[in-house]
Image 1 (tube, rainbow, N blue to C red):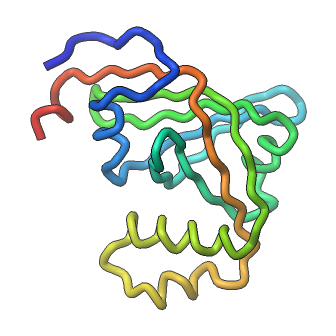
Image 2 (cartoon, rainbow, N blue to C red):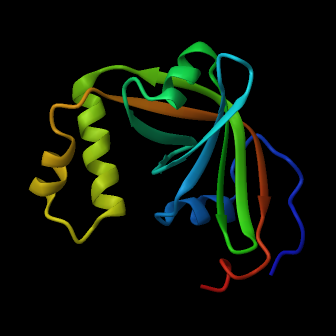
Length: 147
């Protein structure tokens, strides 16, 4: 069992990777055009060292990232959490956006039929957002580690 937050790092620990592998909800924070903060709850998937997100094009949070690629991403489960701050790249390719959304849907809604999942977002212009960690903050007090 670990106690207290880990020192900051630019890479994920083994525990951090294991924590992010489970389908939990994340909150991302971006900067609005007026300088204010915006938060949004999102699905994500860890791929290597990259956090992959997806959104309907035109939503405020990806629009903010198009203007300013800095982001804060946090996943909390009880007292355990991981926060990642960094910058993103945005891929506007609609085919990739549909593929990534289908993968996220299967991960977060495993009991739904794939065809029904795909129909719910078919025809939408989806964008894929990749978060490249700059700073990683972790705290695992035990509830996650003993599962």
